[in-house]
Image: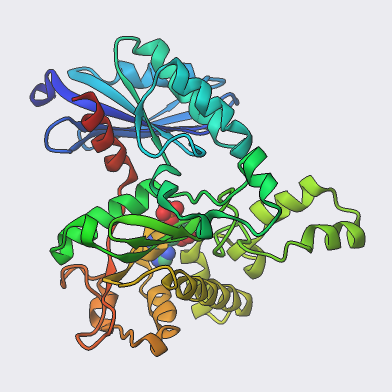
Length: 396
Ligand code: AMP
């Protein structure tokens, strides 16, 4: 602990409606000093888990609010000298093309994007307000999931519906996971020895939420996610793309309300809905290996739909330096990567299964064979570090 005495640091906060995830990075060196998660806030079984100095502490904080939880965290930051706080904000609409220092105008603008992300932005703002109360002297930085995708051209971001919906209500494709895709761009460029602004990639963020992004010369030019994070790939519990007539059809057939159909598509679909077993790829992989047919089917649909979307994204690129896998599934499931790559035979993609099996750890993150026409890499993402870097950049 003495080594941390007065260590300058940056706090990163990712606030959900009943959770608060945080990480504290040293200002220099980018080391994680403290990290943790408060969950089930507002309820009787609210809990705070903190890791510091290699020790994990769990504290019951019944009925604790976000404010209470952050206060508890603050009490455990002894010896640290926070210099700024970075917040993950999901939706920045068309207003934010990069990270910004939060002021009253930014708060109002983020609030006005709330209707585009009703589940996320109001919760993210709770985190900002709480941090402002507890650390009034510190600069607060907003880092948006959508900002990296603000470079999408109109042909990629417009839906083919009457243009007035875009003009009057800003209904368009925004794309999400931008902080992760941006981080992967920077890391991959470093690994392949190119400048980020000269690097063109397809990045696949495969976690509980999944999205793929086409990056041309360092700029996002298309994303599988759209107006909301529901569009695109098959995810843990989200369906991804469905026929736009599905809502009407289901309502007519079953009498389900729109909100019920939306809940089904967001929370009961994807890997969970197809398998009837779990949204967790590890569970499905084990079950599939033991002959569970619906788990096998869910994995097949997941991989095929991803490969199909990637082929669509390739249309937006003039050149492709690499296909990059990231996120919990992308980083850890050699089987998923292998299955996805098998759909790219026509593109001349070939995997080196030995390197794939060890997640590219012994091969500079590369998992493709030497004669693969497109290199394939596994690059671990680090959204918190990206937010810390953005915060450091803006406060300095
Ligand atoms: P994330 O949201 O990035 O934490 O990713 C969560 C997803 O990654 C879940 O579906 C996990 O099952 C999956 N995952 C994590 N580790 C593994 C693993 N070793 N093999 C397969 N999937 C994994």
